[in-house]
Length: 360
Image (tube, rainbow, N blue to C red; front, side, top):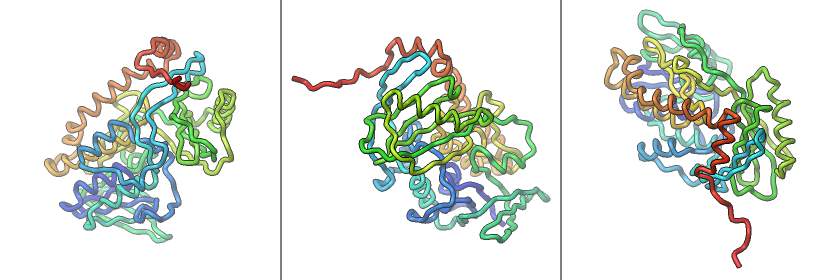
């Protein structure tokens, strides 16, 4: 019998385990191999690996600093914003930290107290509630395990099995599939880029330099022929001067985009959802790390202070997160409406003038 079982060892799940690991008997299960920094996992998170300022703030509040071996070069301060519909380009100063996402997740798992049981390479199969206890099943190396717990936490991402098997009325957020390819390049670009093109997606696309690689990614609605649109995006960027060498890696994942607050579900009874499993992700930028950290912290406090009514307390603890989502919704039209985006970019507000010549 465990006090808490956490399905998913990513940033949300590992943070919750770290915060509560010395106070409760906890089990974390994840399909990836996250125990050792040098281990190769069977699954890789499809993520750009940029730590945004909101996530940096939460790491600072936790008293954490990112180790040097997690960082990848170059560390940049510029985003090249390309509006293909309106044929406008601007540069903006932004402060992201460029990391190896797989190593970042493994580092967070390494911070979990040794009292916590962590099982990797495991597939969560489902659960049932019996007499106020939760019985769950998972498979590891072909063997099925049955575990009992008082509290079950779904931290298992966009296509959450825990959420799927929980009988709730909350509708799912709008779902995209993100695609990324990694290309060998001779020279790193001195900027990240965000690309807006309504012919590709109603969301956005991106490029991110990673050492001697350039990552190209986009988020597309699954039924809209995602990879065909990805190829068109690549061709359009080549016509704008981007250079892509041989492709050395490709990955993809589902991505959520909450359009209404009722699409965010914190759970029911003694089953809670955190991170993207709950729908906590920015509808304007798809930034999810800060929401993972904040929702894990909110649930940890609920479990500590209201064990008799976890979900109601967790809901109250996330009031500011819902306000944050509302603000992102207000901001979104200025990014994704073609006319409003044109006005915003033409205004030059907060743009950065690039110096492309030598001073003589």
